[in-house]
Length: 239
Image (cartoon, rainbow, N blue to C red; front, side):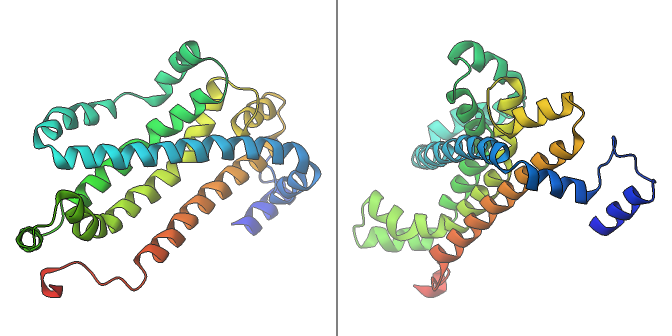
């Protein structure tokens, strides 16, 4: 694909002001390391903090819903309805309420990532078979012990699936927040470069944002393999 794009640009089939050659994008990356690094670090900071907050809140919310069926029946419909509201529509309100600092972007990333983590973790916590629950109860295991010995291990694959999905959203969410208002970040850089018709810089920032997303998903994959390495599946046959 890169070779075809380069050939199309050199042969005049693709206009430089519409689709820049990959070589010009690489040159833009090479010629602007300082400014691109500054904007990338800002976006990475917003992404990391927002994803971490979504992780803590998502797991805590899933545990609360797992422990209380009444709470689950009450809040789950509202949680699902909340996903029908475009998060980008809330971004201007957050800027009015909180300002143009770091927190609006962190909250937007959290809102993007909270739902997949919560739903996946809740599904995993509900996965263990009743026979295993009865076995632990027969040993007088408390609720926390059943969580640590049975529910948490059984929920890990589902939890990491939700976390991987959230990680793929996180960078995009940070850039959406920067579009609405901000002073630094890849979203701001893309906007200013597009306004200046500097398409190689736009594509350079897009390349960096895609690389950050791939990096986050890869890190989640590494954490999943480390957490699940050597762990037999929790089934009734292993009792």
